[in-house]
Length: 123
Image 1: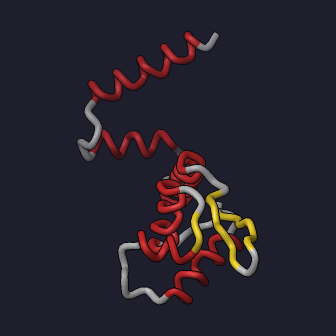
Image 2 (image 1 turned 120 degrees about the horizontal axis):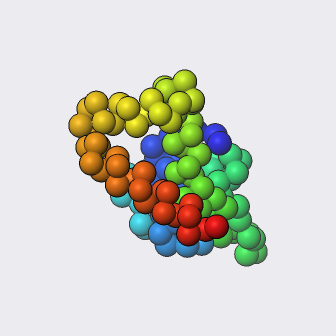
């Protein structure tokens, strides 16, 4: 999955939250009011080139919509982080979380139990 800038992620989040929109509508919801319409339009088209949004044409204008769900993007982003910073080892990620006390051993045990239960329920 291609990487997005912070601003591109913010724009994509608006499509997830609000649904299909024209660029003028995106501008209304976008937090950075100083961002020029043309710049925002270019960023939306860049998201389209990267495969995260698409459009449907209405006369001379386009209404854009997300082509990737938030869940799909989250999984891809997490996978990229694990690959880049943890040598593709999810075990290393979990170990770091426990070491840094972001995840207690008790929480980890509960997580393992939940996963095992889900696997057994799906059989």
